[in-house]
Amino acid sequence: MLPSYMKPVRHDWTKQQVEDLFEQPFNDLMFQAQSVHRKKFNPNEVQLSTLLSIKTGACPEDCKYCPQSARYDTGLEVEKLLAVEKVIEEAKLAKDAGATRFCMGAAWRSPKDKDLPYVTKMVQEVKSLGLETCMTLGMLKENQAQALADAGLDYYNHNLDTSPEYYGEVTTTRTYSDRINTLGNVRKSGMKVCAGGIVGMGESKADRAGLLMQLANLPQHPESVPINMLVKVDGTPFEDEKDLDPFEFIRTIAVARIMMPESHVRLSAGRESMNDELQALAFLAGANSIFYCDSLLTTANPKANQDMALLNRLDIVPEKNKINIDPSDQEEILHKKILSAKTDHLFYNAVN
Ligand code: SF4
Image (cartoon, rainbow, N blue to C red; front, side, top):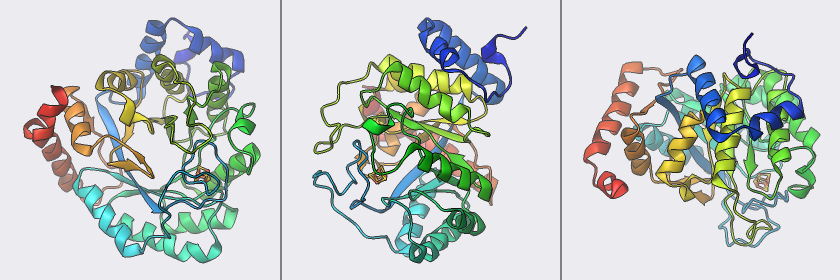
């Protein structure tokens, strides 16, 4: 009989089973995660996404980790919705730098119907460059999800953030079921789902297990599962949160990999404060996607050249774009980037 971690895709995890995965000896957990990972993915490939903030700050919600909430004084410069031309310009730069997916984020509770023509235009234009598209715009009604899907949006991101039990400690202006409803509307529209959470917000191990149980017990697993480490931004209620043991972060990635064996698990926010060794451990635990850009909405991210240097040291290559208009062209760009990392000035700095 197969061990439970090698069984096909499941949607019936109990809390105890998830906690048992977390509680294993670290090496056993890593072995299981890597074994599961190799069944579905090339372990030496990582998908690269770029994230652009298309509307920054002044968000009415109260997510305690977020510098974009209008309720906290974080010194963030508020920006209105970017012009479509500016977004296209940034998308071209991201493509030239080797990204295959372009994610656009707006700090809204939910988009207004008057905003939709602008964001759907952004989707169409970015897609025409041969990039996969993803947006995160807050809660979506069914008709809004459909409008984005009709425009060709590939992925919609909406995180569950944490367990239902801990959720009230993080956000009070929208409910857990609001979030689940948005994910349902996205799924119904035919778009792919990107949904994950944040660890290091003072939650317990049981909460981390609860978050992963919620994600894995959705009727269909999210295609993309970002696991974020809290970035403690001055002025937010979580600015003084205690550091989470980095091995707990790695365990969370490994358990996510085991429970959602066909999803891309993204090593997401918080990478700026991780050293190369910790990131390598995250890849070993089954993370196979990163944000590859100089900033994540409003918080820092490792420089793209440093990322390429790290991938090169680990013999990891960027995953090819599944919707690429000109595959040979894109592949050539990515491989040139990896090769140039060998001779790039920053590469030598990175390994010293
Ligand atoms: S996480 Fe999103 S919804 Fe929450 S405050 Fe930040 S921008 Fe607003």
